[in-house]
Length: 375
Ligand SMILES: Nc1ncnc2c1ncn2[C@@H]1O[C@H](COP(=O)(O)OP(=O)(O)OP(=O)(O)O)[C@@H](O)[C@H]1O
Ligand SMILES: [Mg+2]
View 1 (cartoon, rainbow, N blue to C red):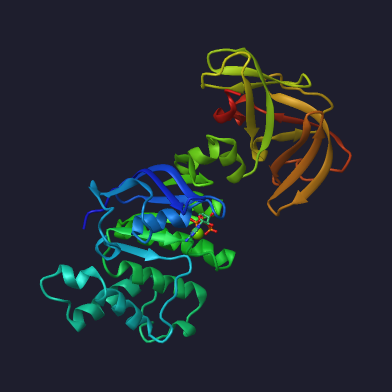
View 2 (cartoon, rainbow, N blue to C red):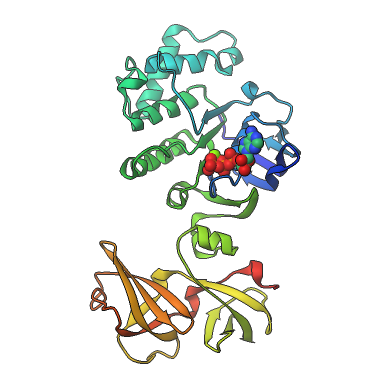
């Protein structure tokens, strides 16, 4: 089976007149890719999955799979595998019966000339359980499985019908961190092995960055950015994305000088920073920019030494040990700057409250946030 292309074109969903869950949402998922819908609770992630699945009707727009509009195709004919947010295995059935139920009630048997024989069903279930690492678990009931094993069965059940699209709604939400990270790797491996086009939903930014070919960040039912994990992290398109994915130091100011690939931003109290910048900002534009804490450095010198770096003097106000790294908060005249420093660097681990330091970041460490450039 070849992987499917999914296209959402200007999709909107209103639950009644007042509740607009999704607005003007467009997205293309390339065949075989895993795309994550990432956003806070209530931003419309489950709604979009349910629209793809045909469990909700579109208010506007259209959804196409392999170029064919699926709006009028009922759920059971869309050839989808889904693990729902509140999924439940049938508790009275064994693992094998849960999977066999999926096969029997699906298109698979109906698409073929003759339904699968019991032996073929058994074989198919065996293959799927092997794929998710549960060889020999056929006779267990859900109550006899751990949380992670139940998730694997749910995934096997979603895949057992050979769907062309896999939809996963926060499948690891109930699991502890270690198990979640293990299953993230495993699901990604299985997805790549099967080569199935997958839409994955999470509100966990690390999960999204770890698992995806591309990430769609949503806020209040709207798409904020659709890009690779690296672009989402390094080049957030909006302040919302910069705030939701990772941590940041934010500044606002005005462009006071501009060269081909850099600009000078002057903050309201007069501090000047140079930033690399390819976007078409002009002198006089009001802008915001962000700097990741891990790109901020601290030194014990009283004044800046490297004229090529942006620097500020300040006083250490708080430190948080994080094992291999340390967070240091520094009070400066432009507010509190947060630095996240590896502890294995010489002289970087023992910062004292009240100590005078110099905070530095390179022009390349600042990201201009385009959504407020026209303010
Ligand atoms: N059946 C419904 N009737 C009315 N409003 C709904 C319905 N389902 C969802 N909504 C509303 O639509 C918005 C989006 O809900 P949705 O379930 O898609 O969010 P989500 O991003 O999946 O959130 P979570 O991370 O909490 O699962 C929310 O404001 C929600 O209250
Ligand atoms: Mg949801």
